[in-house]
Image (cartoon, rainbow, N blue to C red; front, side, top):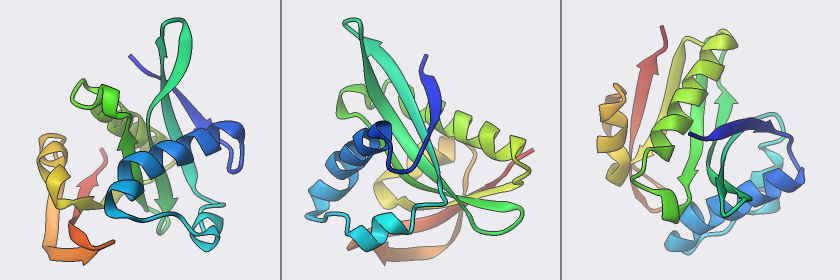
Length: 148
């Protein structure tokens, strides 16, 4: 069971989250974050799930919610620590993000999901919308879920 926090842009925990996002999402593609990309995140919602390992708190995973419209929020930059992948942390993060979105009057959660992650999101009742497209050099699909 993860302990969740909403992080403040630029905080120490935000930088820990940035390191995880870099390790899991960017480095494998030979990419890094630019200052301009990070500046665009200033109004986003940063969700981080922490766990305790050997009496030390560790960032298990994270995601970002970016409001798109009054009723729609986009899930971005979903990342789980490699040591915890396949152990339920990702599902916990999504469930927390959905609850947060719902509690803040969003009714649709959308995302650009990497093709390799489609099965994970389908199990959580997300639907594929449209055709495959390329983003950051790899195949993605738009996926969405109506939050009830």
